[in-house]
Image (tube, rainbow, N blue to C red):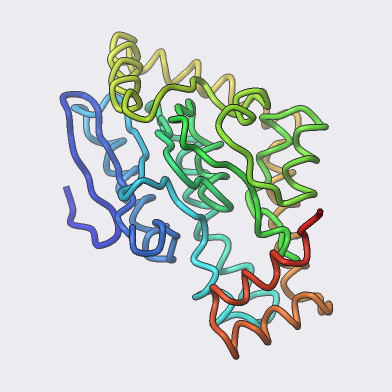
Length: 272
């Protein structure tokens, strides 16, 4: 397999672990990391020894999502086409997971937020440890989820709760919302992934793929792909449409740094 800078690959029999390896930034996705994940997935699809892929994160967190400090620093005043090109890299990776001919399992501990949440939801199965935390908190920064999959995996009330408040929910609430295939203790997560991968290895790969494709196609017929495109449009619009909150946030970002800017933005949503 090729060598990568932002991910680690470990094979266990028929299971390939693909681990995000930027724990110093909570595995937040740079464009390089998005591209490397997609490349590793395409490589796994061509490897007959791999029967299932598990996505996980190093350092106790799945991923905090897009590396917004880089994105906002580089694209804060970008044109719509710049924002579109930026987000298409991550969306293409989510589509790669969606269409992969092999099972893809998200193994979540800690933060699973923003773009990483969307990536996990595109997986065929989501297993979470008790420490899992899920959400789209970027909406509190006048942003929008670019891969709009949440309404397709939750009911309307749950989707609006998550997407219109920016709240981060724990694993138990995520399970009630229908986001998880299973919820286990953190120290049992890897074993649960291995059990599921072992079960899936018993299927004929070609027949399993046909079933996955049929399920996915059902959602596409109902408009899933069009909804994702609409989500990308909303993401671009929110980032190029001026508003006071975004201006103040970018001002804090330039003067005080990303962490302080996020802390300022979060202070707007505190309730007694």
